[in-house]
Image (cartoon, rainbow, N blue to C red):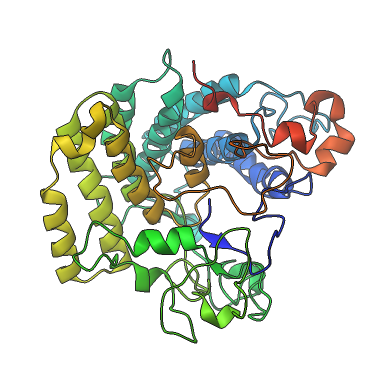
Length: 440
């Protein structure tokens, strides 16, 4: 996604040199997903459908988060808390998995709306997201539904902007509703945000961290903002710190590493900003994202005025969330009030409008893997993401013009379930689009 870049040239994760040593699979299906499955089961067993609904939300979120990076996924053979675990599950095509996950989100809304519920969600202060507020959980489910329906943008027979807009209308409708996981500054390294010095993300050594700093692509985007007379996005100093040596905001070119004669102190380092402090929460989905989703859907159905209005609120919601000053918000508001439908449709199509929406969505979703979904849906277009280029020293399997489209499945699955998994070679997996990334 090019939010950050390594301090070393040609570092594997900068240049798309990924293989099957990839732990999202195991962390999800071994550690996180079984809790969702157990919530579903225990909610049913205790006549507590609100718990079942929460489990169903996270079942859909977790499996589709994996599917968005990998493609085909198990579904019917997943752990359900009742039957013996299937260690070599069958894989289902992504279209099927998506439909089943969306059905589960619809069921979550039904379950969370139930009036008969034996055990309250916030029993023993256990609801760390919404403290038992089922209406916010329902809005969370609708927000995810809007996101996943919007992923169908390349599928002419499935994409329905009205359905996306309807889901948005029932999702988060104001500040303070974001679904976020709260990290802590007062525990172990795994309690802290992984992008912080205190966290388990590789930043404890500031002389050789996992990532050297923010990328030049991201830094320059924030330094050429259409929302401020100065060109400097007011969120820049909130998101990141300036370089220690120069006091300036400087990014690292992805894949190049540090320039000759430079040290990490010449670049804007990662830890310590809004998204990268020990107690920075991780947002599953936010009100701001919902408004950007709505803006895109309205633009695609030719409601350009509605798209501009939703776009504007998406930007302002993110600025309010980050604590941008009232003066800067007023200036940004004036800039956006001056936008016309022509600005969003210059060139005779919606590319310019998508550029407004997707660049601001990019800024509002730092580190969120949903950004990679967006970049693939937009085919990594430099007309939509100005100045976006492939990494320098890109992995040799990629020919000119090719971009990474998916990830390899983890080595454990390859070794133990190869027959169901299929061809997992990097030269195949990394270059093969997932189902929603193919135009129909």
